[in-house]
Length: 390
Ligand SMILES: *Cc1c(COP(=O)(O)O)cnc(C)c1O
Image 1 (cartoon, rainbow, N blue to C red):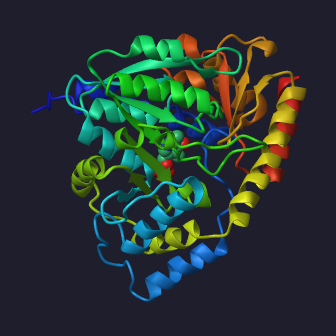
Image 2 (cartoon, rainbow, N blue to C red):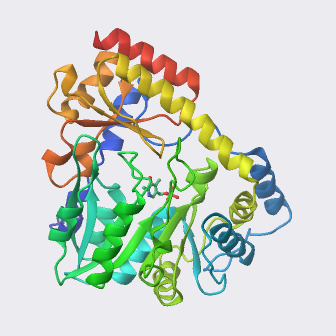
């Protein structure tokens, strides 16, 4: 007898298609350079690898680590928050280690969002947010990054808030635009959150990836915000080991206690030996974090300079490892069309902002390029674009 039950529940069907899968497939088919997905093609510090290998050989972390994370890592996370931001946390109660920042986000939204609750986020958003809100049976509400520099539209945020708004998701440094929220913008978000008694999920996966004289400010350090903010971070992003999938959430103990419940019933625990390595990484001297930024800034300048020469409208990122371009100066109106043609025309893959938006008009002319790649790869990509687009 044939099965008549459709496999995926209706609220998750909008999340079935992945432009990353489509573009990676296309990249393979035509041998394109993949500047779509954001992962570095060089590994992080060797000493972190050695710590992980030693932990495996010594039998540390090879069996289930504590669900909330090994004490050494929780300690290192709280020391890091104190060192960089002056945030005081108790490693016993205010931290939970997760399988990457991704699981932290899902665990937070499932723990804190009930059916029908609204979650407000800036568009374009990171795709996991929208899927996780649907998993929690919440409603997502988009607020645009707008204007020529794609800054957060605070007026629209104010207008989007309703009595049903439970959480605002903030992501600064922001993927995909590369925008870093200024203190004034953060203060405006904070004022709205406090006035309406809304929680904030602050995704700070790119906390160490910022350039020039910009500065990353955790929103939880603003007056009145600590008690309503859960902050998420990613060992993969900060140490260039995206495959290790060690992330964490920090915040006030009552919110963390809630997230520990869902986390325990998602993956329970993960990455035992890698937790030792990331704990070591968090204690690296300032020089490590400075060099990470300097190296990435050179790559940003290389890619952005090349794209500008090709005639794109380039929005130079203040942080993250993504650059955004406007494709209209090249005669295109739609970044999705551009990205579907690009592998065939030039042998390069990029990602259209449109797929990170509910309102297709918000992201329509914009395309995201990852520059966390070796310099020779970026040069080759620019070479191909020069040949293919002229
Ligand atoms: C990569 C990324 C994450 C997920 O981080 P993992 O540690 O790899 O799970 C979360 N948020 C944003 C904005 C990201 O770009």
